[in-house]
Image 1 (tube, rainbow, N blue to C red):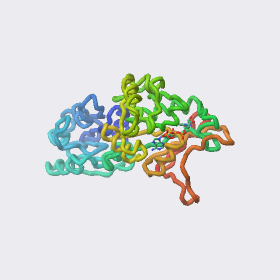
Image 2 (cartoon, protein in one colour; image 1 turned 90 degrees about the vertical axis):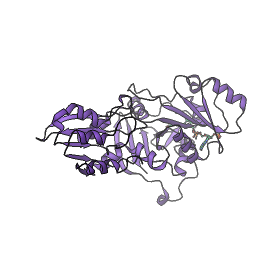
Image 3 (cartoon, rainbow, N blue to C red; image 1 turned 120 degrees about the vertical axis):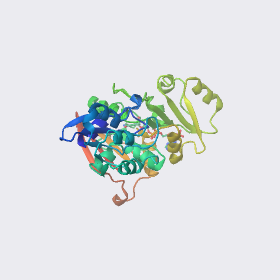
Image 4 (cartoon, rainbow, N blue to C red; image 1 turned 30 degrees about the horizontal axis):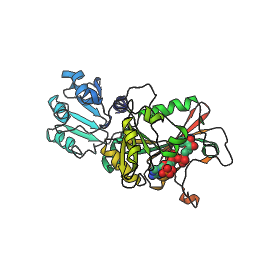
Length: 355
Ligand SMILES: NC(=O)c1ccc[n+]([C@@H]2O[C@H](COP(=O)([O-])OP(=O)(O)OC[C@H]3O[C@@H](n4cnc5c(N)ncnc54)[C@H](OP(=O)(O)O)[C@@H]3O)[C@@H](O)[C@H]2O)c1
């Protein structure tokens, strides 16, 4: 199963809105006879690719799959049928597929055909691997990962708004790898105005769909001269604004290829913003600040995962604090992380955890 999960991870950036899936077929003698993993563009599922490799040797063997095989007609015929036809004796799965079209039906179909089914092997690891897919299916909203670069004293910009660069080259390379895992990246209007960022995925790694750059901009302050607007035809830009936004400004941005999404709340209702992104087939969002956007997402309890890249420098004085809003009254009220992981990138430290 560990190998199936490793294979599944190879689809990173290339499966959304589908899940990452890996499969290993072990023959009757205990030898690996087939391996496969899913890529959206390749269409064929991990099980089918592994079965094709295994051929006759799959008969009487065991299929290890990182996710429940599907039993309905989708973009491909049911994988449960393929496993039954190949006469595998046993299917070992990590987790059920939360997709309502699957959700236990794949297992039922296999059992009904006399295939032994075992589930729950490396379940936590498998659920973590597909955390974005699972969250989006269960809630109807994208998975939200808040990422900020902060100084030792917890500031994300100097008192003049200068934030380039708080962290070093290695940490910035890591951030581009992180961007590749997400369907969308989001910032507040303050960041767009002060930094004029590009917000693209420059990991250099393959991705299936371009990273959608989302801006919370109730007052529609983005200009056609900004880097975001000027590159909107190369990589999508979506601006969430108010229904009352100035039609001349809307037209000028649309002329650049910017997609304007008018929200009744102007983007202040972040639950509605996320639901709107889900309707645009966005399953995961990396929120990259600034302080007010970060505070608003945390306050609305819409953040699933947090990464702070802490750099060994001190900004002091009136430098911009990492998270805006009123903040916690007591330590007891603080937003606390669990399953914390710490990694070093050059002189900087990445602290990641779940809320
Ligand atoms: N180190 C880092 O990781 C990092 C990352 C990003 C930014 N920064 C720095 O942070 C600073 C900008 O932070 P900021 O707090 O001023 O700006 P921000 O959080 O980027 O943007 C806040 C603005 O977004 C608009 N907005 C629309 N809907 C919103 C909502 N639901 N919640 C919150 N805001 C919403 C509002 O604009 P209106 O008030 O105009 O309506 C609000 O003032 C810059 O200096 C930038 O360099 C640092």
